Length: 73
Image 1 (tube, rainbow, N blue to C red):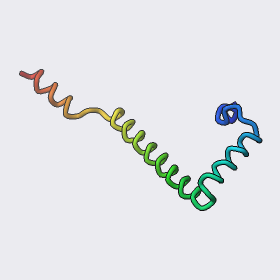
Image 2 (image 1 turned 120 degrees about the vertical axis):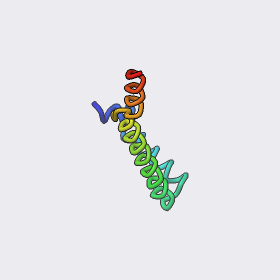
Image 3 (image 1 turned 90 degrees about the vertical axis):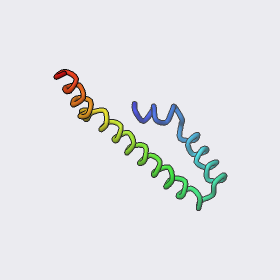
Image 4 (image 1 turned 90 degrees about the horizontal axis):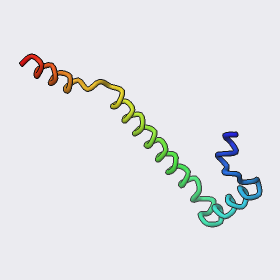
């Protein structure tokens, strides 16, 4: 089921045709460079997501200290 959603209902012949068009447009030497750049982009995106998740899950220490000071006054 997941594979079907990933391929968006494309058959083998359509995937091969798309791969052939990409090969013709970019050439065999350029494709590894494109995939390397795409991999770096995905890695950077995942690191950013982990960083945001970490910020969300960690308690906000300065805000707690400020609220305690205002309660004592």
